[in-house]
Length: 377
Image (cartoon, rainbow, N blue to C red; front, side, top):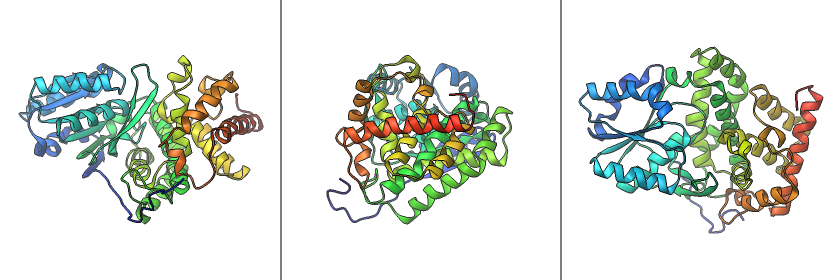
């Protein structure tokens, strides 16, 4: 039930500073100098080769003492504890996250444990994690465990679009899949407390609407630019929508069914599904959200047109679980309806049975759309 504690205050929160542009990483010392001189630089091996070496060189030239932390791949409590111990042993005085969503969520947790400031340098525009005051944590084998909330947002978010454009276009498309849920979920959760514990403000609603506007206007064009390695105005606009607008929109506007069903999908132990990106699973969750919202067929088609144009999955088969049994999907629905899940923000009756049928219904409308448009199922 939305707002059981009858909260009346409205609340908006955000990072202290957001910077975006080509070659922005070269200005990192200017933006990070206020935090200290001995950062932990957290990145995985691949990202370190793409951008970490360059960032380390830039920081060391400015007299920073950089400790490298190698991210193991999963935002789990075990990984957080390991890297927190590393940070203590090297007396780091702030944390730098360089990479994707799970790297960023892990870095935020380390900073919180140590009482340090955190700067986020995303190398993809695949999620809205960079700006938020929360982490999504998983078990070591990748099953959703819980959200972890913080008292403040990252201090600085620095997005170098000349780095982001080097990532495969699938990452940008996945970011679109994550961000396209923002406005829909915020509208569905408008009477519920947001992640800051207050009701959504008018500005959060405006941000969600602008995020959606940009995605429909420039999403396909931005993905094509990404394929060409071109940092165009459309690409910049979609990077901002995926990262800043979606981040502010979901946190201060609220989440609903799309992300809850994403979390529920982790109940299916499928290698193919586990390889799907966060935003790809949220995209299918968005189709479920539309079904639960009783959206018209023409409205659903509008979203499906955008999603399929950037190769996002809109059916269970495209998620790699086309043969999922009713028993498995009932498990998904049950987990999506776990206590404190975001689906309870919706101002309508929700039960696991209703969610199960929404999942089946979403798969049906996705398959029907692809058949009508002559697209490969």
